[in-house]
Length: 225
Image (cartoon, rainbow, N blue to C red; front, side, top):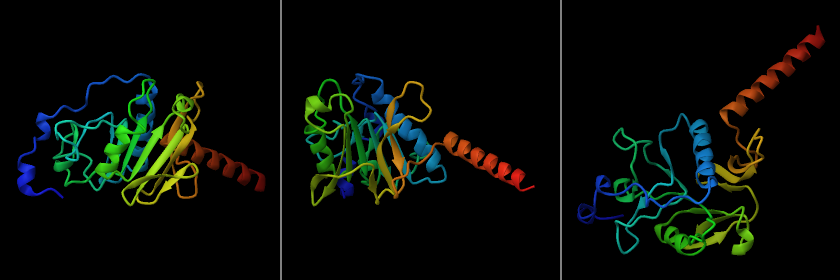
C-alpha cells in the first residue's frame, strides 16, 4: 500500500497514455481478448465490482519509472468499479484504484517474441498478479512451450498449473481453450468455465439452449396427449 505522500508525487491518469501504441501483429490479439470481454459482460452483467481491460496500459510502481506501463493483451481486476467516477478509463492506474492490481493477466504470444515468458512475466510477478496466461497457439513449438499455459503466483513465484481448463477459485471462473461456437471459420478462442469444467455459454447460446429445451418439452407434451 502506497503512502498518501508518495501518491501525491505520482502522475494522474489524465497525464498518462492509454497504451504503448504498439500495433498487434495478428487479428487474434484483438479478437480473442474481446471475445472474453463480451462474454464476461453477459455473465457478470449484474455485477459492478470488476473491470476487464483489452490492450490497455497498466501503470504501476514496481518498476524504475511509474510512467512506463505494462500493456497486457487483456487483464481482469476485481473489487474495482466498472467505471472511474462515472467515466470510462483511459488506462488502469494502480495508485488510483486503491492499489488493487489485476488478478489475471493474459498475453497472446506474438510472431515476434515479446518477452511473454520472461520480461513481462517477471513484471506481473513483481506486481502481484495472481494468475498469468500465455496463449501461444501458433508459435508454441518455436518457443518450446505449450499452446496454453496458466501460472499461479504461489509464495512469490509463478507455478505452472496442470490440466485445462484451469479453475481459479479466487475469481469464481475457469479459463481454457475452446472452438468458437458456430464459427464457419473453425477458429479457436479462450472461454470461461465453471468449477466442473463446463464452458459458460454466451447470451445467444443460452437463448438457443432454452429454445431447444422448450421445443423438446412441447414435443413430450404432445406425445402424452
